[in-house]
Image 1 (cartoon, rainbow, N blue to C red):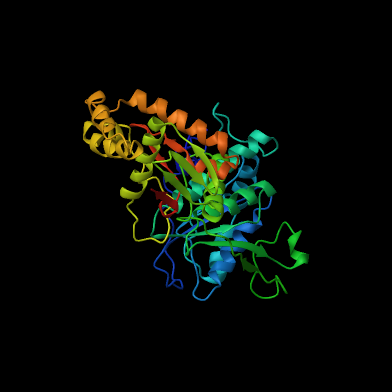
Image 2: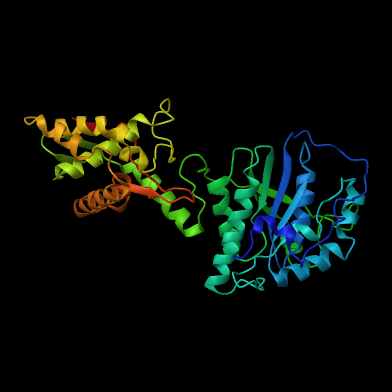
Length: 397
């Protein structure tokens, strides 16, 4: 995607620099201290927007939007613009129910743009689905990053895959204060293109608009949420869940030069065992969340290769080497003499690659592999390395 969907206000197609100049009006006030952000997926059924705005305004206490975001397509945008920006629907609802200004303006609309710069016309192909999914995830991630906001998302409207992506995004990024809804109206009003909210008096007799407040799993802070695409985020989260539920103990015996993962025992050569043990010790000593019952789903204990490779780390490496060669203490002195300048990054990468290959040869489960290997976290500065397994699962003897 060539632009960040969360910054769609910069779209040349959708500009309105005066969109904040909305008239003031006497209104009921909400008791919430949050900045209320409404997120919709919409296309050919614009009614879900006005129905949701109406239903939230009727709650006790009422909820009024400070910002509205509508993720749509070019086709959907044309319908929505004609419905809300070129008609009096929202102005009539404000007048009928003494509502505050409704911030649905040109810049509220987000239309995903492909890497080639083409605006998404409709959601038909796998590529279209991927594009709209990434856009939804980017918006929800961005808006939930502010602790002063509360997000209200409506699953109604748009293609079914858009509803799936929005619900999934809320599971990954939603916080305790955030809400996910489905709007409900009587069946006889569902197919009426002229029904947008219940009009006062007898104009909409029997029309009741309700919001189903949908429960959802909140995985935020329970798993790693890397800045990556939807598929990789799903895979990483699945690995984290599998590790938390099924991860066996990992025991290293330096004298016997063995690694035991849940009863599966295999040997490592002294040099590989040294590097692996060093990273296991880093996992325990560099943890920033020692007060938690289990490892926080993070990479805070991962290090750049200059940490194990620095001359200052030689004493710890020599101590491990001495324990591996228990009956030959001179081995530690030989090791120190051979690596006076520290273990270089190229040598460390070779050892890490060999360690990981040996682990994968003996461990078949992908989730267990991912927890036990020395992983690489690639960053713009310098890559960081570490082991994902919970530190309380590690035993070194």
